[in-house]
Image (cartoon, rainbow, N blue to C red):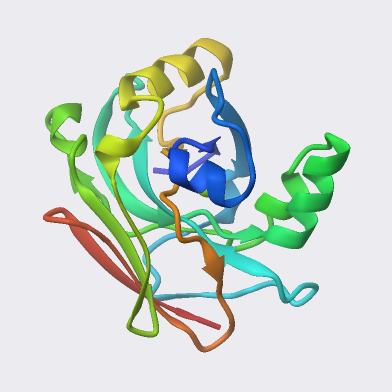
Length: 196
Ligand code: MG
């Protein structure tokens, strides 16, 4: 299935909102990554050459099926250029330059989801070169999976195959070429990437 759009929520874990100096949102803050940012079926992804300030954000990713329901999920990285994002945020400008560059959304294999409830209390983590950087639990989300799904379906032209990134726990930080990343959603999926 082709991913036409990647809908992403910002600041959906309170600790992460705080670590970047942001307020806790009162309604979902949604931004887009182009579907062509996705990196599927690969154990590596490349960083852009025009910046050295790239951050990892590990996230639970949901996939919309033909009826725009969720029957599959994955672990994904919302790769972000942090310096530019800070400047754009300060000006009130769109984040596209900081969020939607080539290979900015590596996605693991999908795993089946029978009921969203089975995703609501899972540890999610990211290690970089063996060092634990991000660790959270999906129970810490500010907006529930149902609220996010309902919000994007109500406001945007969601298509079959689209991905919803559900936010990142605290601990975001730099990635550089040569790093080995391991993203995990406990009991569901574990994925390794080499950064090139
Ligand atoms: Mg994110």
